Length: 326
Image (cartoon, rainbow, N blue to C red; front, side, top):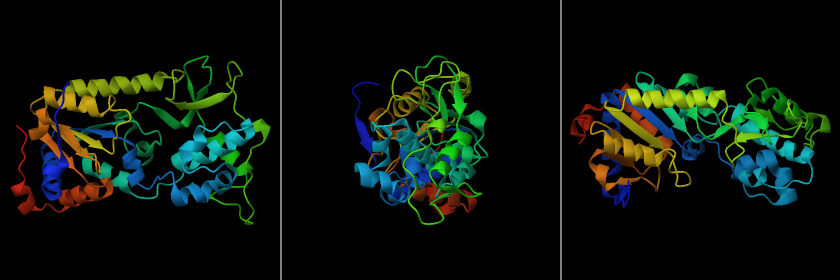
């Protein structure tokens, strides 16, 4: 779609748009969820502030990091220190309990609908909170997987046990629910791991790397391709149906993955609806404005409202909604 004229949420009231979303969910045959980092941020997976200080105070003091992302790209002087950082990063953003139940509420919202999730997030929150693995496509990788840094072969490896050994070797404690706690004696955690725990490729012996799409070395393994095929099959089966393309927390960094395809598929299917939930960035092309729901609000508030409306329908509001599928 070229030469776009955009319609923003500022021209509509939030309450109207929320009611339109509730109606769309009720009446659609299928929901395609497109999730960006804003959804996980709303769920409490923040990469700055209190969480940064709680788990990385020693790295902040040493290197002046202002957010977790900075450390992920920092040229640490040793592999022992780099993996000490990454193991904490992986554990708290992939294996520790989520700070809120936002993802569970989203699942409850679409559980009785044929649905599929496309996400650029790599924290695996969808599967961890009960979404069916067969309905998920993580396009950009997974914190829970490693790959050869070369890469010499197209395979990824689960890292949970190895990461746990790394964080515990630094003095951190992993309690039964997966939460990461500081050393019990009040001592500062070590800022390095034993050399023996540094991961290496089992095939060529080169260092392992995160299975994250940062450059052209990203491994798209058999699982990735199988998920991509399931997603394309889902889109094919519903391409002419009453589909709700529900985009949540998607920014402008990689619009070609979720945002632009959602706009295009909505434009191509007159029975489809596009919904965008994103504070300050809720907009859509004018070409599909009449079939767009633009919610300039936090995902937590939006999903809570929609979930409550499905449980206890507000007939007065729903009757006044200015939307109905063709």
